[in-house]
Image (cartoon, rainbow, N blue to C red; front, side, top):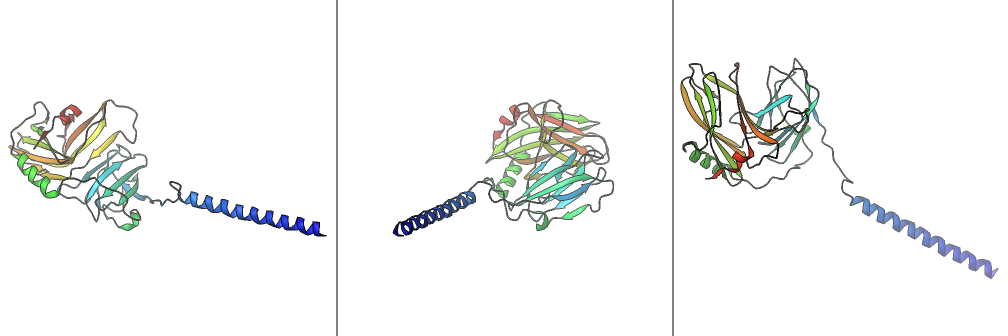
Length: 290
């Protein structure tokens, strides 16, 4: 009888040790899983937006737009001229395949869109709210120059003499040229001359900076990267007939990867005098300090 009691006590001790071990293993696994990268994730639900070819859709944000990434070259995106929180979007061709658009604003919020084509958009002006924004700010920005400093530098540059040669394009009497490149505190300044030798006013529809592949290849989502200005000084909305003017455009510091170049495009509203410049990384690297 004593022998049986001893065996039962041993079995109870073994069972207690096993149960304790199981709880210990489960506790360790739970703690480890909570520390795994990506163990907890929140998803940003994309907002469905239909755009068209012959009309512009305006997206109005509560903060200044800091960054834009588009999934396809079939859409055109730019900041409204002279405004920091309005983004203008339209189709570059009719019937494009579904693509996406990502926007980051100055408060660190990220907006995600699924873009589709339509001939009749429901609305052409949308005021964006938290319903299409990340649950909390997700972007962290590098320190950059203050707005006051950028404006002062632009005013210094706009009257400087021409430095660069043979960096221009002309169409039916209208010429666009990059006269100088300058850099200060991680901001690159483009001094751009605009000349209209015709008697017909040139109304600017689009002034766009973007990085593109040197060789045309099968279209990919990363083939074009738009560079959004952080400041623009001068009249970039119209070039009156028989006139010349200079503008300064400030962009965040960047360099251009191999086999790519910076494209500067200016398109005429309701017209065909469209201009385009190719700017190499060699030119960018020669930007002069202010």
